[in-house]
Image 1 (tube, rainbow over the protein chains, first blue to last red):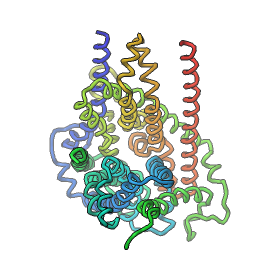
Image 2 (cartoon, chains in turn yellow, green; image 1 turned 90 degrees about the vertical axis):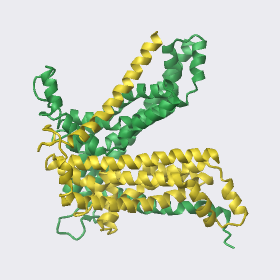
Image 3 (cartoon, rainbow over the protein chains, first blue to last red; image 1 turned 120 degrees about the vertical axis):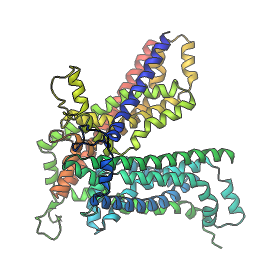
Image 4 (cartoon, rainbow over the protein chains, first blue to last red; image 1 turned 135 degrees about the vertical axis):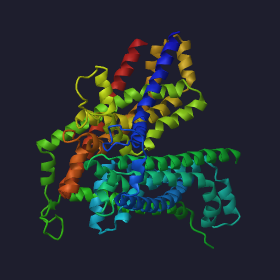
Length: 265
Length: 297
């Protein structure tokens, strides 16, 4: 009896916390359909602000900057992270620990601190292209992220196939491209999607390293808070949420499928 | 033909990532330290920062009473936020690890982590709608007679505190869950078999074994909260200050990179010091615990 009461209380608490986590998100989704001029006073249902987004050229140009820098960031972090992630999972050596420490350092450094470092360093070396600055800035964290995701999968798959390829005389780059990469594909794609969403949502690094005229979408949204809350900002963040949800769902499915295939092998 | 010596082949794939981080990440951390000793030059000068006369003047300014006060508020907000997150997260992680079936567990985990993948801006921005003085929630509370005037939480330190707790709660749940899930259920069973009641089992078995997860969750939450910029910028107004906002102000608006750099160094030092104090407290607690247990056996 006592066990039941505690169990029910614990489960009720969990449901309460899940509600607490989700209500604000649902509120924004709901209010993005608010007809009123002032966002937080509900006046009735309308999709007016969704139309207004596409008339706002500043939002569209910020979206363009965001997508371009996110894609370049994905290309960099996936290539560097995949190659490093496979290598660190396959071979141990004196370099393993320092390398994992470096990954940890990249992941744990407060974003604010690395953002300050980047704005100083990028200015110092004369990197002046806005999209490049955003892409490089985001790729530093994401390379570590991809490396971790790929490493986890590589550790889950035995390297017998790669060894067999080596025994049959395949040079390392060929066995990497034809054996390792296809096996790693779910993790690589999942890493790419996570890397894209990180970049697409990033505020702090983008705010510091951005160049005038090349604001990313989150930076534009942040600056429009100061000008007052309008429905088009809510509509944009809800659309961005839709994109993020789709990408995360694809990543989750791929990682799941991937792990099932490993079992078959 | 393309035979490479085994030694070089093994670390070579790490080289591209390491070079990338060395040139852009490590160099930028180094740049913070170097700049923190520089001096901001007048706007007309060719170079924005002068190193002709390196000095500690930025650190003197970073330790002036105004900044110290904001550093203190930041550590306090992050500290309270971390403790609140851990207390709210533990029961949730406990239920997930011990009271739900495997099938439900993975779905619930996904549901709990999901908000963390939703744009940070959106999640923070939501509280401006919910807490708006003329908003529906405020009016409902007034209608019920719970409050007599419109909600006045927005643009205060309390709103910042709330936003911090809300945003980092999912981050706190995960490491605690992982630690609790690793505990073999047989241990709890054994404890019950030798006659320990549920409370004793919890404090003697479950909690000590979950401590690494609690520490991990605490450290992660604290680092993220102390370095936050978005929550105070959106929910804090003029009165809700955290050091992240002050640093951003120095760098983005006052263009004072050296002072911003010195403040970043102080922030890292403050985080490390807090970590060291927490670690020390833990060692003492552990020692007391062992002593207490020794006496009771």
